Image 1 (tube, rainbow, N blue to C red):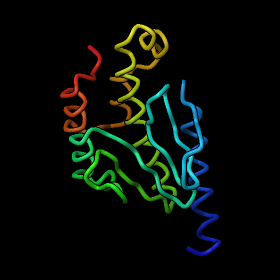
Image 2: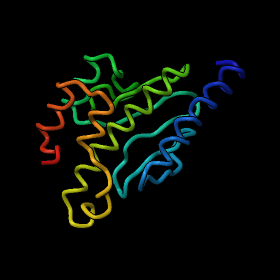
Image 3: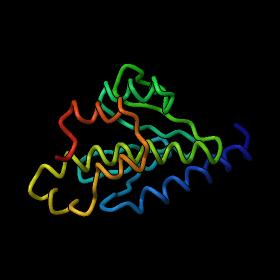
Length: 152
């Protein structure tokens, strides 16, 4: 990757970082290999690498659904895990990376809302409504429901 390409990738990744870091209760921390990770307490919602890679964890079933829908790809290092990799090369890729990270964020928020502390902390986040706004497929919604994560 040339210097110009590296600078462009870093600018695009910076847009992802700026957006995700602004979400309620997200912490950003350094991640190995020139990266930034996004956490909610001890849970990692995903991380980015400066050269244009976004890695996002999901359950294996949800990961398979997202890959089948063409939303992301297998992880570039551990393809058999629940992790996914999305490459950022242009503005459309930035939007897709943010979509994937928001989906992971909502998954973790909804799990945390099942605890007394999380119920209060994340009270203002309506996961069901946000999934609607993201335009998730029925298969993605079903993957959330199978894991017992949807709000009642």
